[in-house]
Image (cartoon, rainbow, N blue to C red):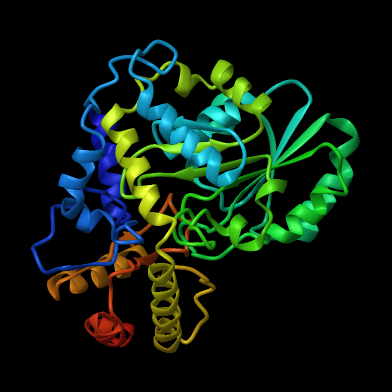
Length: 377
């Protein structure tokens, strides 16, 4: 077992050994959660209402979607999403399953994937596991993307461009309108957008950045997750009827995984019903996120680049990120250090994630510690 010990010791020496965090004490300010609308922290308030509305939702599907007899709530949720987006939807067990499955299904002859350098690991794993042909372009570098498309368009029937609408580590946005314009220039181009960190918090009804920008109909495959702002679990793909049929038949994580429990699908349906009307929560979250980002910029003397509820505080060093996170935790603030391989070397940081029930004065302790540690550590 020395090889295993060597790996773990190497991670420890590089300050990259990870452990599952313990549950924080009550009253702790959690700035690490993806519970962007704060629905998860208040879910118990709706328990009675939920079970009144969905009294027959079982706690296990006991089979995959292609085999299970328990489909009522899954179909109800897919119909709800189709009604909101105006196109078919398909449920997956998680965002990871969705990305791996969709990319695998799209890996067919004469297909090239072109991916933003900062796409999520689930998309990268999907490309690698499927043996996809792919190229990457520097983050949000549209000129480089155009050069790749111009060079490769004649060699492939389809080129699938992979981006996130809001990037999970930097909190910045993909230029979706520009990507839609580019798509119109290349008939074989497909646009694949992961809205994991935008679903619930952006757009008039919380359907994501694409809804906010009015380009939803131009995106060939739009993915959203239900385990973040929706305070549930699972994920969904929005696509054409033909694409949905392809995914049902060729997306291996969909075919070979036991389906989400019916009660989980029912809870997602319940949560989305609340999300669409949470306009004021979205407005408040955007406001405190701007204030938080501005204060981080003052402390660090550099722009955060964030335009969302995800705000990075770069340390450029894993040990420093660990030390700052420890100081914050001692003061009752949970904000976790992000290190390789989640970010590249030199990109180590504290990643702050805000929730809609937070108030600006709750961040005073956080800013005070960051000011102190900027000079001490």
